[in-house]
Amino acid sequence: MAVFHDARGYRISTDNALAAAEIFTALENFLHWRADLMPHVKAALAADPACGFAQALHGLLLYGTRNAAFRPMVVDSLKAANAARGAMSAREGRYVDALAAASAGRITEAVSVYEQILAADPTDLLAQRLAQFELFWLGEMAWSADISGRVAPAWNENIPGYSAHLGCRAFDLEETHQFGEAERIGRESVARDPAEVWGTHAVAHVLIMQGRHADGIAWLDGLKDNWAMANQMSLHLWWHRCLFHLERGETDAALAIYDAWVRNRDLPVLKGMPDLYIDMQNGASMLIRLELRGIDVGDRWDELAELTLKRLDDHSSPFTSAHYVAILAAAGHFAEAETAIASMTTFAHADDGTLGPVYLAAGIPAAKAALAHRKGDHEAVIRHLLPARRALWRMGGSHAQRDLFFILLVDSASKLDRRDILSIALADIAGAGFVDVPGRVAYRDAAAALA
Image (cartoon, rainbow, N blue to C red; front, side, top):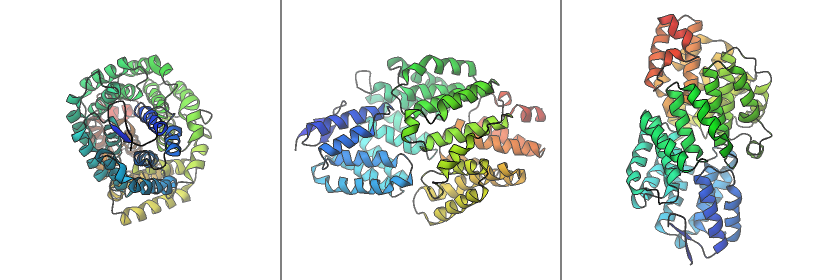
Protein backbone atom coordinates (compact mmCIF):
# COMPACT_ATOMS: atom_id res chain seq x y z
CA MET A 1 0.00 0.00 0.00
CA ALA A 2 1.42 3.34 -1.06
CA VAL A 3 1.22 6.23 1.36
CA PHE A 4 0.37 9.79 0.40
CA HIS A 5 0.05 12.78 2.71
CA ASP A 6 -2.21 15.82 2.59
CA ALA A 7 -1.12 19.45 2.96
CA ARG A 8 -0.84 19.11 6.74
CA GLY A 9 1.04 15.83 6.57
CA TYR A 10 -1.80 13.42 7.32
CA ARG A 11 -1.76 10.04 5.63
CA ILE A 12 -4.16 8.98 2.89
CA SER A 13 -4.01 5.24 2.28
CA THR A 14 -4.29 4.39 -1.41
CA ASP A 15 -2.09 2.85 -4.08
CA ASN A 16 -3.43 5.27 -6.68
CA ALA A 17 -1.71 8.64 -7.11
CA LEU A 18 -4.70 10.08 -9.00
CA ALA A 19 -7.06 9.09 -6.19
CA ALA A 20 -4.77 10.75 -3.65
CA ALA A 21 -4.53 13.94 -5.71
CA GLU A 22 -8.31 14.12 -6.09
CA ILE A 23 -8.81 13.60 -2.36
CA PHE A 24 -6.34 16.37 -1.58
CA THR A 25 -8.18 18.74 -3.89
CA ALA A 26 -11.54 17.77 -2.41
CA LEU A 27 -10.24 18.31 1.12
CA GLU A 28 -8.86 21.76 0.40
CA ASN A 29 -12.04 22.80 -1.40
CA PHE A 30 -14.18 21.57 1.48
CA LEU A 31 -12.05 23.28 4.11
CA HIS A 32 -12.25 26.57 2.20
CA TRP A 33 -15.99 26.36 1.37
CA ARG A 34 -15.49 26.00 -2.39
CA ALA A 35 -18.28 24.69 -4.58
CA ASP A 36 -16.06 22.39 -6.63
CA LEU A 37 -16.11 19.46 -4.24
CA MET A 38 -18.07 16.32 -5.06
CA PRO A 39 -16.61 15.86 -8.58
CA HIS A 40 -13.18 15.39 -6.99
CA VAL A 41 -14.49 12.92 -4.42
CA LYS A 42 -16.18 10.95 -7.18
CA ALA A 43 -13.01 11.06 -9.27
CA ALA A 44 -11.04 9.67 -6.32
CA LEU A 45 -13.55 6.85 -5.91
CA ALA A 46 -13.45 6.11 -9.63
CA ALA A 47 -9.66 5.89 -9.50
CA ASP A 48 -9.63 3.73 -6.36
CA PRO A 49 -13.01 2.41 -5.15
CA ALA A 50 -11.20 0.56 -2.36
CA CYS A 51 -9.83 3.75 -0.80
CA GLY A 52 -11.54 3.66 2.57
CA PHE A 53 -10.88 7.29 3.44
CA ALA A 54 -12.40 8.45 0.15
CA GLN A 55 -15.47 6.33 0.89
CA ALA A 56 -15.74 7.78 4.39
CA LEU A 57 -15.33 11.32 3.09
CA HIS A 58 -18.01 10.71 0.46
CA GLY A 59 -20.41 9.46 3.11
CA LEU A 60 -19.69 12.30 5.51
CA LEU A 61 -20.22 14.94 2.84
CA LEU A 62 -23.51 13.41 1.71
CA TYR A 63 -24.66 13.10 5.31
CA GLY A 64 -23.77 16.75 5.81
CA THR A 65 -26.33 17.85 3.22
CA ARG A 66 -29.04 17.00 5.77
CA ASN A 67 -31.11 15.35 3.04
CA ALA A 68 -32.80 12.03 3.77
CA ALA A 69 -32.84 11.19 0.06
CA PHE A 70 -29.08 10.62 0.21
CA ARG A 71 -29.25 8.13 3.05
CA PRO A 72 -28.91 5.02 0.83
CA MET A 73 -25.68 6.43 -0.61
CA VAL A 74 -24.41 7.25 2.87
CA VAL A 75 -25.06 3.65 3.92
CA ASP A 76 -23.25 2.36 0.82
CA SER A 77 -20.25 4.57 1.54
CA LEU A 78 -20.12 3.35 5.13
CA LYS A 79 -20.24 -0.26 4.01
CA ALA A 80 -17.41 0.29 1.50
CA ALA A 81 -15.32 2.20 4.05
CA ASN A 82 -15.72 -0.57 6.62
CA ALA A 83 -14.62 -3.13 4.02
CA ALA A 84 -11.37 -1.18 3.53
CA ARG A 85 -10.50 -0.80 7.22
CA GLY A 86 -7.57 -3.18 7.05
CA ALA A 87 -5.65 -0.84 4.76
CA MET A 88 -6.44 2.34 6.68
CA SER A 89 -4.49 4.19 9.34
CA ALA A 90 -5.98 4.52 12.83
CA ARG A 91 -6.79 8.17 12.08
CA GLU A 92 -8.61 7.28 8.85
CA GLY A 93 -10.51 4.56 10.66
CA ARG A 94 -11.84 7.08 13.15
CA TYR A 95 -13.53 8.95 10.29
CA VAL A 96 -15.34 5.70 9.50
CA ASP A 97 -16.36 5.51 13.16
CA ALA A 98 -17.67 9.07 12.97
CA LEU A 99 -19.65 8.29 9.83
CA ALA A 100 -21.15 5.20 11.48
CA ALA A 101 -22.24 7.22 14.52
CA ALA A 102 -23.57 10.20 12.60
CA SER A 103 -25.47 8.16 10.04
CA ALA A 104 -27.13 6.25 12.89
CA GLY A 105 -28.25 9.53 14.47
CA ARG A 106 -25.71 9.44 17.31
CA ILE A 107 -24.38 12.89 16.55
CA THR A 108 -22.65 13.68 19.83
CA GLU A 109 -20.85 10.35 19.56
CA ALA A 110 -19.54 11.43 16.16
CA VAL A 111 -18.30 14.67 17.71
CA SER A 112 -16.48 12.73 20.41
CA VAL A 113 -14.71 10.79 17.65
CA TYR A 114 -13.58 14.04 16.04
CA GLU A 115 -12.30 15.16 19.43
CA GLN A 116 -10.21 11.99 19.66
CA ILE A 117 -8.76 12.67 16.21
CA LEU A 118 -7.85 16.19 17.26
CA ALA A 119 -6.34 15.04 20.55
CA ALA A 120 -3.79 13.07 18.55
CA ASP A 121 -3.57 15.40 15.53
CA PRO A 122 -4.65 18.92 16.54
CA THR A 123 -4.09 20.44 13.10
CA ASP A 124 -6.39 17.94 11.40
CA LEU A 125 -8.62 20.70 10.08
CA LEU A 126 -11.16 18.29 8.62
CA ALA A 127 -12.00 16.98 12.10
CA GLN A 128 -12.23 20.51 13.48
CA ARG A 129 -14.57 21.62 10.70
CA LEU A 130 -16.80 18.54 10.99
CA ALA A 131 -17.01 18.84 14.77
CA GLN A 132 -18.01 22.49 14.51
CA PHE A 133 -20.60 21.67 11.87
CA GLU A 134 -22.30 19.06 14.04
CA LEU A 135 -22.16 21.14 17.19
CA PHE A 136 -23.49 24.21 15.41
CA TRP A 137 -26.63 22.30 14.42
CA LEU A 138 -27.08 21.23 18.03
CA GLY A 139 -26.58 24.72 19.44
CA GLU A 140 -23.52 23.45 21.33
CA MET A 141 -21.20 26.30 20.45
CA ALA A 142 -19.55 26.42 23.87
CA TRP A 143 -18.46 22.84 23.23
CA SER A 144 -17.20 23.84 19.79
CA ALA A 145 -15.29 26.76 21.31
CA ASP A 146 -13.67 24.37 23.77
CA ILE A 147 -12.48 22.23 20.86
CA SER A 148 -11.06 25.10 18.81
CA GLY A 149 -9.46 26.53 21.94
CA ARG A 150 -7.72 23.24 22.68
CA VAL A 151 -6.21 22.94 19.20
CA ALA A 152 -5.34 26.64 18.74
CA PRO A 153 -1.85 26.39 20.35
CA ALA A 154 -0.83 23.80 17.74
CA TRP A 155 -1.49 26.19 14.85
CA ASN A 156 0.72 28.85 13.31
CA GLU A 157 0.88 30.79 10.06
CA ASN A 158 3.27 28.26 8.49
CA ILE A 159 0.69 25.45 8.57
CA PRO A 160 -1.49 25.23 5.45
CA GLY A 161 -5.08 26.06 6.23
CA TYR A 162 -4.26 28.50 9.01
CA SER A 163 -6.76 31.06 7.70
CA ALA A 164 -9.51 28.42 7.73
CA HIS A 165 -8.64 27.44 11.29
CA LEU A 166 -8.85 31.10 12.30
CA GLY A 167 -12.27 31.36 10.65
CA CYS A 168 -13.51 28.39 12.66
CA ARG A 169 -12.13 29.80 15.88
CA ALA A 170 -13.61 33.24 15.20
CA PHE A 171 -17.10 31.84 14.69
CA ASP A 172 -16.89 29.80 17.89
CA LEU A 173 -15.93 32.94 19.78
CA GLU A 174 -18.71 35.02 18.22
CA GLU A 175 -21.41 32.52 19.08
CA THR A 176 -20.15 32.44 22.68
CA HIS A 177 -20.37 36.26 22.88
CA GLN A 178 -16.63 36.94 22.78
CA PHE A 179 -17.18 39.57 20.14
CA GLY A 180 -13.95 41.54 20.34
CA GLU A 181 -11.67 38.53 19.97
CA ALA A 182 -13.97 37.00 17.37
CA GLU A 183 -13.76 40.10 15.22
CA ARG A 184 -10.00 40.34 15.57
CA ILE A 185 -9.40 36.72 14.61
CA GLY A 186 -12.04 36.78 11.86
CA ARG A 187 -10.47 39.84 10.27
CA GLU A 188 -7.04 38.18 10.47
CA SER A 189 -8.46 35.12 8.74
CA VAL A 190 -9.73 37.25 5.87
CA ALA A 191 -6.57 39.35 5.71
CA ARG A 192 -4.62 36.16 5.14
CA ASP A 193 -7.11 34.88 2.57
CA PRO A 194 -9.74 37.34 1.25
CA ALA A 195 -11.74 34.37 -0.07
CA GLU A 196 -12.08 32.90 3.44
CA VAL A 197 -15.86 33.05 3.63
CA TRP A 198 -16.14 31.50 7.11
CA GLY A 199 -13.95 34.22 8.58
CA THR A 200 -15.99 36.76 6.63
CA HIS A 201 -19.11 35.16 8.08
CA ALA A 202 -17.83 35.31 11.66
CA VAL A 203 -17.18 39.04 11.40
CA ALA A 204 -20.60 39.60 9.80
CA HIS A 205 -22.16 37.92 12.83
CA VAL A 206 -20.26 40.16 15.22
CA LEU A 207 -21.47 43.22 13.35
CA ILE A 208 -25.14 42.20 13.34
CA MET A 209 -25.03 41.32 17.04
CA GLN A 210 -23.48 44.68 17.86
CA GLY A 211 -25.89 46.63 15.67
CA ARG A 212 -23.12 47.95 13.39
CA HIS A 213 -25.21 47.75 10.25
CA ALA A 214 -23.34 50.25 8.07
CA ASP A 215 -20.08 48.50 8.98
CA GLY A 216 -21.67 45.18 8.02
CA ILE A 217 -22.71 46.41 4.59
CA ALA A 218 -19.26 47.87 3.98
CA TRP A 219 -17.55 44.67 5.19
CA LEU A 220 -19.49 42.38 2.88
CA ASP A 221 -19.46 44.80 -0.04
CA GLY A 222 -15.70 45.01 0.11
CA LEU A 223 -15.31 41.23 -0.04
CA LYS A 224 -18.09 40.07 -2.39
CA ASP A 225 -15.80 39.86 -5.43
CA ASN A 226 -13.81 37.10 -3.68
CA TRP A 227 -16.71 34.64 -3.52
CA ALA A 228 -16.76 33.38 -7.12
CA MET A 229 -15.47 29.92 -6.14
CA ALA A 230 -17.49 29.64 -2.94
CA ASN A 231 -20.34 27.24 -2.28
CA GLN A 232 -23.71 28.13 -0.74
CA MET A 233 -21.95 30.01 2.03
CA SER A 234 -21.65 32.89 -0.42
CA LEU A 235 -25.46 33.00 -0.67
CA HIS A 236 -25.69 32.98 3.12
CA LEU A 237 -23.38 35.99 3.20
CA TRP A 238 -25.81 37.75 0.90
CA TRP A 239 -28.55 36.81 3.38
CA HIS A 240 -26.52 38.57 6.03
CA ARG A 241 -26.30 41.58 3.72
CA CYS A 242 -30.11 41.57 3.60
CA LEU A 243 -30.23 41.61 7.40
CA PHE A 244 -28.10 44.74 7.54
CA HIS A 245 -30.31 46.50 4.99
CA LEU A 246 -33.47 45.48 6.85
CA GLU A 247 -32.14 46.98 10.06
CA ARG A 248 -31.55 50.23 8.20
CA GLY A 249 -35.08 50.19 6.78
CA GLU A 250 -33.76 49.55 3.27
CA THR A 251 -36.31 46.94 2.32
CA ASP A 252 -35.99 47.54 -1.42
CA ALA A 253 -32.29 46.69 -1.24
CA ALA A 254 -33.00 43.58 0.82
CA LEU A 255 -35.62 42.35 -1.66
CA ALA A 256 -33.34 43.02 -4.62
CA ILE A 257 -30.53 41.03 -3.01
CA TYR A 258 -32.95 38.23 -2.21
CA ASP A 259 -33.90 37.97 -5.89
CA ALA A 260 -30.38 38.33 -7.23
CA TRP A 261 -28.51 36.14 -4.75
CA VAL A 262 -30.39 34.51 -1.88
CA ARG A 263 -32.93 32.59 -4.02
CA ASN A 264 -31.84 33.11 -7.62
CA ARG A 265 -32.42 29.65 -9.08
CA ASP A 266 -30.26 30.56 -12.10
CA LEU A 267 -27.12 30.67 -9.97
CA PRO A 268 -24.97 27.53 -10.44
CA VAL A 269 -24.93 26.63 -6.74
CA LEU A 270 -28.73 26.75 -6.59
CA LYS A 271 -29.18 24.99 -9.91
CA GLY A 272 -27.18 22.05 -8.66
CA MET A 273 -29.03 21.71 -5.34
CA PRO A 274 -31.91 24.17 -4.93
CA ASP A 275 -33.18 22.62 -1.70
CA LEU A 276 -29.99 22.54 0.37
CA TYR A 277 -31.12 23.15 3.94
CA ILE A 278 -29.22 26.42 4.47
CA ASP A 279 -30.66 27.94 1.30
CA MET A 280 -34.19 26.96 2.29
CA GLN A 281 -33.67 28.51 5.72
CA ASN A 282 -32.28 31.68 4.15
CA GLY A 283 -35.27 32.05 1.88
CA ALA A 284 -37.95 31.36 4.45
CA SER A 285 -36.54 33.53 7.21
CA MET A 286 -35.90 36.49 4.91
CA LEU A 287 -39.39 36.42 3.39
CA ILE A 288 -40.97 36.33 6.86
CA ARG A 289 -38.84 39.26 8.01
CA LEU A 290 -39.77 41.23 4.90
CA GLU A 291 -43.46 40.50 5.31
CA LEU A 292 -43.36 41.65 8.91
CA ARG A 293 -41.98 44.94 7.64
CA GLY A 294 -45.06 45.27 5.44
CA ILE A 295 -43.46 44.13 2.18
CA ASP A 296 -45.56 42.17 -0.33
CA VAL A 297 -43.28 39.32 -1.41
CA GLY A 298 -45.61 38.20 -4.20
CA ASP A 299 -45.27 34.61 -5.32
CA ARG A 300 -41.78 34.09 -3.92
CA TRP A 301 -43.06 31.49 -1.45
CA ASP A 302 -44.14 29.20 -4.28
CA GLU A 303 -40.71 27.99 -5.39
CA LEU A 304 -39.76 27.24 -1.80
CA ALA A 305 -43.01 25.35 -1.25
CA GLU A 306 -42.51 23.28 -4.41
CA LEU A 307 -39.25 21.98 -2.96
CA THR A 308 -40.56 21.59 0.58
CA LEU A 309 -43.49 19.42 -0.47
CA LYS A 310 -40.92 16.74 -1.28
CA ARG A 311 -39.38 16.89 2.21
CA LEU A 312 -42.36 16.36 4.55
CA ASP A 313 -40.81 13.24 6.09
CA ASP A 314 -37.21 14.47 6.19
CA HIS A 315 -36.19 14.71 9.83
CA SER A 316 -32.48 15.35 9.43
CA SER A 317 -32.53 18.87 10.88
CA PRO A 318 -35.00 20.22 13.48
CA PHE A 319 -34.17 23.83 12.64
CA THR A 320 -34.80 23.22 8.95
CA SER A 321 -38.00 21.30 9.66
CA ALA A 322 -39.42 24.33 11.48
CA HIS A 323 -38.61 26.43 8.41
CA TYR A 324 -40.26 23.86 6.15
CA VAL A 325 -43.50 24.24 8.10
CA ALA A 326 -43.21 28.02 7.87
CA ILE A 327 -42.80 27.72 4.09
CA LEU A 328 -45.79 25.42 3.67
CA ALA A 329 -47.99 27.65 5.80
CA ALA A 330 -46.92 30.81 3.98
CA ALA A 331 -47.75 29.19 0.62
CA GLY A 332 -51.19 28.18 1.88
CA HIS A 333 -50.41 24.48 2.27
CA PHE A 334 -51.89 24.23 5.75
CA ALA A 335 -52.81 20.56 5.51
CA GLU A 336 -49.30 19.65 4.39
CA ALA A 337 -47.86 21.75 7.21
CA GLU A 338 -49.94 19.76 9.69
CA THR A 339 -48.79 16.53 8.02
CA ALA A 340 -45.17 17.61 8.40
CA ILE A 341 -45.66 18.36 12.10
CA ALA A 342 -47.36 15.00 12.63
CA SER A 343 -44.46 13.26 10.88
CA MET A 344 -41.95 15.16 13.02
CA THR A 345 -43.83 14.10 16.15
CA THR A 346 -43.89 10.43 15.15
CA PHE A 347 -40.18 10.53 14.41
CA ALA A 348 -39.36 12.33 17.65
CA HIS A 349 -41.11 9.74 19.82
CA ALA A 350 -39.50 6.83 17.98
CA ASP A 351 -35.96 8.14 17.59
CA ASP A 352 -33.32 6.87 20.00
CA GLY A 353 -30.58 9.11 18.66
CA THR A 354 -29.64 12.73 19.24
CA LEU A 355 -32.36 14.49 17.28
CA GLY A 356 -35.59 13.02 18.67
CA PRO A 357 -35.41 14.95 21.96
CA VAL A 358 -34.42 18.10 20.06
CA TYR A 359 -37.53 17.87 17.88
CA LEU A 360 -39.70 17.48 20.99
CA ALA A 361 -38.08 20.30 22.96
CA ALA A 362 -37.60 22.86 20.20
CA GLY A 363 -38.23 21.85 16.59
CA ILE A 364 -41.90 20.92 16.96
CA PRO A 365 -42.88 23.90 19.15
CA ALA A 366 -41.14 26.24 16.69
CA ALA A 367 -42.92 24.60 13.76
CA LYS A 368 -46.30 24.79 15.48
CA ALA A 369 -45.71 28.44 16.30
CA ALA A 370 -44.78 29.24 12.69
CA LEU A 371 -48.00 27.64 11.47
CA ALA A 372 -50.09 29.37 14.14
CA HIS A 373 -48.57 32.74 13.32
CA ARG A 374 -49.45 32.37 9.66
CA LYS A 375 -53.02 31.49 10.64
CA GLY A 376 -53.20 34.57 12.85
CA ASP A 377 -53.63 32.49 15.99
CA HIS A 378 -51.37 34.58 18.19
CA GLU A 379 -52.49 32.94 21.41
CA ALA A 380 -51.21 29.64 20.02
CA VAL A 381 -47.91 31.24 19.04
CA ILE A 382 -47.38 32.23 22.66
CA ARG A 383 -48.63 28.88 23.92
CA HIS A 384 -46.09 27.00 21.81
CA LEU A 385 -43.10 29.33 21.98
CA LEU A 386 -43.11 30.80 25.45
CA PRO A 387 -42.37 27.54 27.32
CA ALA A 388 -40.00 26.37 24.57
CA ARG A 389 -38.10 29.60 23.98
CA ARG A 390 -35.23 28.76 26.33
CA ALA A 391 -34.75 25.45 24.52
CA LEU A 392 -34.70 26.86 20.98
CA TRP A 393 -30.90 26.90 21.04
CA ARG A 394 -31.02 23.10 20.86
CA MET A 395 -32.21 23.30 17.24
CA GLY A 396 -28.87 24.78 16.32
CA GLY A 397 -28.34 27.69 14.01
CA SER A 398 -26.82 30.97 15.10
CA HIS A 399 -28.23 33.55 17.47
CA ALA A 400 -29.05 35.66 14.41
CA GLN A 401 -30.90 32.80 12.72
CA ARG A 402 -32.88 31.63 15.75
CA ASP A 403 -33.92 35.22 16.30
CA LEU A 404 -36.65 34.60 13.71
CA PHE A 405 -38.72 32.71 16.26
CA PHE A 406 -38.34 35.45 18.86
CA ILE A 407 -39.51 37.90 16.20
CA LEU A 408 -42.66 35.80 15.77
CA LEU A 409 -43.18 35.64 19.54
CA VAL A 410 -42.80 39.40 19.94
CA ASP A 411 -45.07 40.10 16.98
CA SER A 412 -47.82 37.91 18.42
CA ALA A 413 -47.42 39.34 21.93
CA SER A 414 -47.59 42.86 20.48
CA LYS A 415 -50.77 42.10 18.57
CA LEU A 416 -52.35 40.81 21.78
CA ASP A 417 -50.94 43.70 23.84
CA ARG A 418 -49.25 41.16 26.13
CA ARG A 419 -46.69 43.45 27.71
CA ASP A 420 -45.79 40.79 30.24
CA ILE A 421 -44.70 38.49 27.41
CA LEU A 422 -42.87 41.32 25.65
CA SER A 423 -40.76 42.08 28.71
CA ILE A 424 -39.78 38.42 29.03
CA ALA A 425 -38.98 38.01 25.33
CA LEU A 426 -36.96 41.21 25.02
CA ALA A 427 -34.88 40.24 28.03
CA ASP A 428 -34.17 36.86 26.45
CA ILE A 429 -33.16 38.50 23.18
CA ALA A 430 -30.69 40.71 25.00
CA GLY A 431 -29.40 37.61 26.77
CA ALA A 432 -28.71 36.03 23.39
CA GLY A 433 -26.09 38.72 22.85
CA PHE A 434 -27.86 41.38 20.78
CA VAL A 435 -26.39 44.64 22.01
CA ASP A 436 -29.16 47.10 21.09
CA VAL A 437 -32.49 45.27 21.29
CA PRO A 438 -34.65 48.43 21.48
CA GLY A 439 -32.92 49.77 18.40
CA ARG A 440 -33.59 46.74 16.23
CA VAL A 441 -36.29 47.10 13.64
CA ALA A 442 -38.28 44.02 14.72
CA TYR A 443 -38.35 45.08 18.38
CA ARG A 444 -38.46 48.84 18.27
CA ASP A 445 -42.20 49.20 18.73
CA ALA A 446 -42.35 46.53 21.45
CA ALA A 447 -39.53 48.19 23.38
CA ALA A 448 -41.24 51.58 23.05
CA ALA A 449 -44.49 50.10 24.39
CA LEU A 450 -42.67 49.03 27.53
CA ALA A 451 -40.86 52.33 28.03
